[in-house]
Image 1 (cartoon, rainbow, N blue to C red):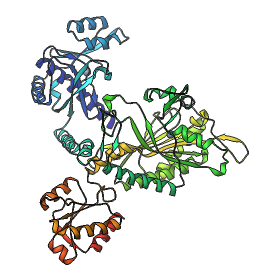
Image 2 (image 1 turned 120 degrees about the horizontal axis):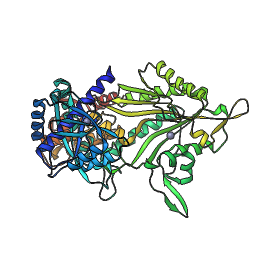
Image 3 (image 1 turned 90 degrees about the horizontal axis):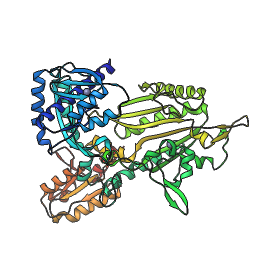
Image 4 (image 1 turned 90 degrees about the vertical axis):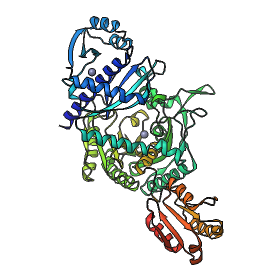
Length: 575
Ligand SMILES: [Zn+2]
Ligand SMILES: [Zn+2]
């Protein structure tokens, strides 16, 4: 049922794209058409326009779309000879459609017509334009034809459509909320991170002091957690000989994401896109008996992957990032217990960061696979049983596993209901064979280990973006870069304020003092804009009574405290 609905929604949205295109062609004669698919949450259409469009033009286009909808034109499907289609699109000077047509290896193609508008299209579509009722155009941006920077840049108009007014309104509200939470905007305002495209390069992230302190807290939490859970921490180099990536297979199936090799003394080296082969070498540096397994190696490993500049997006899509990466080397019999432990850890970690709702997918054996069937069955069952034992609801994605093993993908739901890909647990039968990774079993035989790749948060950069958006920049006390800001009403209270600062710092808190010569109201406004959990106000009364006045973020109530009481309160909150 859900799938049918999803399919209908896509049909509606793709039809909306046709209606958008016909409106644009009517408004701007000479427009050439690119493509207009339905996408997650909406649709877009790419145009080569004779004019420059901005978002201010969208209402006008919407008006035109409404007229087309009102006329209730039928969507008519026609199958025509490819040659006939070529002739037709040539007459219309649709050079992009011609390019697409030339790549179709069939004699017949289908076109869809409504009113005077014709599009090369497989369909399906709604019956008539009048069936589109609730839609909205959202934004305008540039997009290279077929995503290739060497091609002309077209104008892309994004929009969305729903079956009901309520759904549309709910989605638009969520978009508004998402805009306010945009990690790129908050990252700038709160001085968390930056990207110096001009000087340093696109997709390469700088963690500014306030963001770096959060990263340090996350990293320390992760290291401690992994040590407690029987992992060993390792560090591995960032470049490796290209022959390593040949053995690992990455140069075969992953090369489009890898950077070009560099020459060092006549040898080719490549910057690492993954940490796995490094961990394999560490495991292989000595012989392991079955008694030593499982061996779990953990690294906050930085990797570099090529992404086209067009898809880079703040911290979400970058070219260099650090994973909370680990590899577990175990026997087939140990897989299930390891997965169970992992699921416990995943839930614990995600809870700690405030994420309590998940969507979990188990992807099973695809058509093309390697490894023997017994192991596949064993691993798939291990993943299933572990999920069931832990009472975690999941869906199965049949045949969607990677060719070298089944996996679990976990998405987290954020404060405004969006899902974000987060943890992955991937069983691997391939790499142990490629690198000949074995253990000596109790029968004296050397056997292949099973490798489990896993990342709990995924990329720290991406997870940080999700954190920023989830909390709208108002981090919980344990993560807040500055936990308390002290605001003296005037310089007269500076000495007492400094004493309070020192005592809070000695108790391990991250504290700042605002000694600027501005009014208290202004200082409060600044502290609020920095989303600092607590401000401490110091004036005559506080100094005389040897107390402090405290105001929590989001509240306009001020409360007097003894310093010790406040410290206790903070410590309690941190627990
Ligand atoms: Zn279509
Ligand atoms: Zn790996």
